[in-house]
Amino acid sequence: MSTISNTYLETQKELHKNPEYGTASLSYATMLKSIIDQTGAKSISDYGAGKCNLKKGLQHAGLTEFEYFPYDPVFPEYGIPKSADMVCCIDVLEHIEPELIGNVLCELSSITKKTGFFTIATGPAKKVLSDGRNAHLIQKPSSWWLRKVVDYFEVQHLESFDDHGFWILVTPTSQKHAA
Image (cartoon, rainbow, N blue to C red; front, side, top):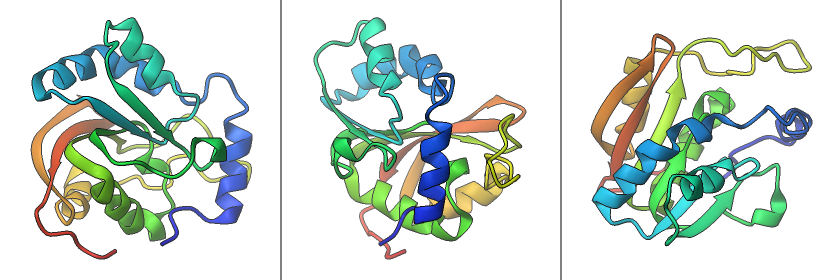
């Protein structure tokens, strides 16, 4: 099951050379620490981990006892996505190639043991890809996203983070769907 094309992977490798690219997870670390404390999660899978800023942010927020599993196709040394109590997917889903979003949600569902925390921007990014497209390949409202997400998860909480996106807390459904 493909989750990224080879051409787009090369584009993402170029973007990741920018030290400012992939820092969004830092702003969620304190809130995530609170959610992790409440849910008792002992393992975290960071899907689209980039430079592993989420781990740094969680440690800075005072979370020290957890297993951390980064995944990002740009960094093959991280290995494949790994199952964890909590799966975080921060500033990733809107960057997925539209024809592969079902595959990515299916993969997220397959590795989420207890809870998922996903942020999704609904408007354009400030960055433009080398081919001229906006870096947010999917710019759809929360209603569109929810129809996709509920095929794989139960939504426990949804909250807008500004007028351009939202975050959701999800749990896996008992029935897994094929993409």
